[in-house]
Image (cartoon, rainbow, N blue to C red; front, side):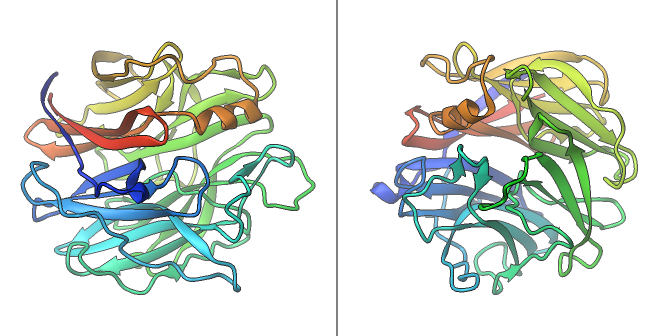
Length: 370
C-alpha cells in the first residue's frame, strides 16, 4: 500500500465551522463524492451544532460549500439538533439519508450525564434525494418496535444482495431511567427501499461490557456482515483490543465475539474487489495514529498495514479508565472517526477529523493505492 495524495474539505471561515467531526464520504454512481459531517462552534454541547453535507465532482480537488440539507422538526414540542448524517445510494441519482436528532431544549446540559449514565433524547430521522443530494424529502421519524431509548447512529446504512437495507445504531439509557445501563449495539431492517423499518436485532448486549462504536460491513458474498467494536471492560475498567463478530445471515443472528489483536477504536471497513478486507483504526494511547490494515479474510491476521495519519500531540485516551472517565476523554479527542471508501481500481479513500485542538478540527482524507 502507498499514499497517493492528501486533501481537506474546506469550510466557511466562521465560528459555526470551528469543530468539524463525524465525517462520512460516499461515492455515488455518477462518480460524485458526497460527504457529511457535524459542524459546530465547539466539540462539546453548544447552541450551534448541525449535520452538513457537500460534494466533489472532481475526486476531492474541489468541494461545494457545506450546507444543512434538512431541518429536523420538533418532537412533541421539543426542539432538536441534527448531529450526524449518513447516506446509502439506492441506484441512479436516488439516495437514502439517515440523521440523528438530539434534544437541544437545554444546551447547557451535557449529552451524557455521568451521574445517571443517561443520554439526552436521541432519535433517527430518514429522508430521500432524487438528485444526488441537492434536495431532500421531508424527514420522517424512524419508529423502532419496543425501542424507546436514545439511539445514536454508528454509521451508514448497508445494502445486502437481496436489497434489504440495514440501519446500525446503539441503544443507551434514557433520562429518568433508574435501572442499570446495559449498552447494546443494534440493527434494524428495511425491506421496501427504506420506507419502513422493522425486526430490530441486538448485536451485542452484555452487562458491564461496552462494545461501542460498532463498524459493520457487508462481505463479498453480499449476505455476511463483519462487525468491529471499540471495547471497554466495565469490570476491570480497561480498554481492550478491538473485538469483532460475524453474522452469516445478514445480521439476524451473530456468532461468537473475538479479539482482533489490534488495540484502538475501529473505523468503517471496506471490502476490496478481490474479497480481502481492509480496516482502519485509531490508537490514541501514545499519540493519535490512524492505521489501515488488510486481511485475507474476516478472521485471519492483518498481513499489511500503513499509517495514514500521525498527530504531533500527546496521548488522548487511557487504557485504564472507568466508563465515566472514558466519556469525559471523548470530548477532548482532536483526531478521530476514521472511515474507508472503496473508489475502484484498487484505490481506497481514508478519511477522519483532525486538529491540534478538539474545538478546531477539519475533515481530512487520504487516497491510497492498494
